[in-house]
Length: 312
Image (tube, rainbow, N blue to C red):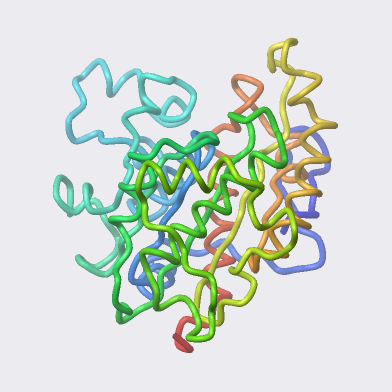
C-alpha cells in the first residue's frame, strides 16, 4: 500500500503490488470487533486517522469525525464535510474515542454497542511529558485481555523529522507498553521496563537509549502485539517556506525510508503515506483533506484485517 501512486493530481490512489479493499462500514465494524482495543498514538495527522475511522463507522461524511451532537447551528455550517479537518476550530472537536459516540450518539454507529473500542492518545513530541506517559500507562491492562490490542503510531513533524527523536519517542512508548502490559513479553525477557515516574522517564530519555546499540528488548518479545507506524504524508504547495528544507518532500521521503528500516528492527510494521499523498489535496500544505484521510484510514483497516487475531 505504501508504494502506489496517482495518475494526475487528486486522481484515485492505486496501491502497487497488492489488493487494497475498500470495506463497507459493516465490514469495518467486524474487523474492529476482533480487537479488545485499538490505540492510536501520535499527532494531528493521527487524530485525522481516527476521525476518518469514525466517519466510516458512523456512515457520515458530513460530521462523522467530530462531536456534532453538541454543535451549535453555526458550527454545523462551519464544520461540514471537508471542514471537519480543514478548519482547526472544527478539527480540535474531533472524536477521540468511540466510547464518546456510544455515550452521546449511539444510534449513529454502524457497529453493535460494546463491540468496538478505538481511541487516540495524543503524544506529539519527544521528550514526552510524564503526565502523557502516565495517562497512556493507565490505558493498558496488567492481565491478558480476551482479545488482542492493536497499536498504531505516528510521529515526526513536531520534532522536525529528527529520526533519532522519533525513535526515542517510539522506544519509550514501547517500553511503557511492556511495563504496563507484561503479558506482551516472554518469560525469558531479561530487561525490566521502568515504571512511569518522573525520574524513570528522565533517566530513559537522557541516557543513550538501548536501540542505538541495537539491543531494544522489544525485538525479543513473543507476545501477540500488532504494531504499525505511519510516517507523515507529503507536503503541498501551501507549506510555509520556512519548513521546506527540514520538512519538505525530500526530507519526508528520506524520513519515511529511514523510519521503515528502524521500526522493523523493533518488530513494528511500517506504512508510508508519501506516495499516496504527493498528488493529493493538502489544504494547508501539511494535512491531506477528507478524501486523503479516508484513504489513510482504509489502509489501516486493511492492515488490521490481515492480523490473525484468532491466534491471540
